[in-house]
Length: 84
Image 1 (cartoon, one colour):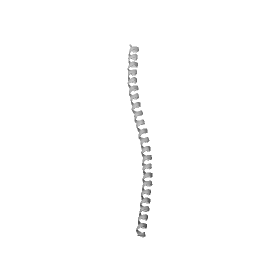
Image 2 (cartoon, rainbow, N blue to C red):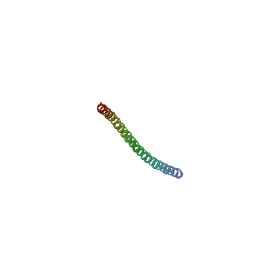
Image 3 (cartoon, rainbow, N blue to C red):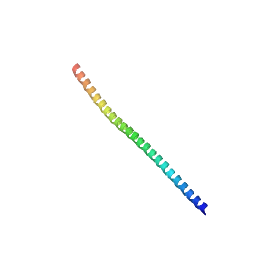
Image 4 (tube, rainbow, N blue to C red):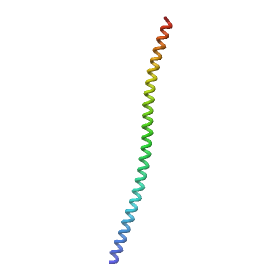
């Protein structure tokens, strides 16, 4: 009877140790995954910010190109008037 009790106690302690080890290992992995996910989110945010800024710059460039075309037409008109 004592050997059965000792086996049950030993088995219970082994189970508790295994469960505790698994919990702490899983907790550590979860923390690492969460850290990596946060780093990835920061990179995505920076990338999205660059994309938004690029679109804004493209809009400005397009507007400046239109303004330059209008100014070139004005200059040509003034040159034609000056030649007459």
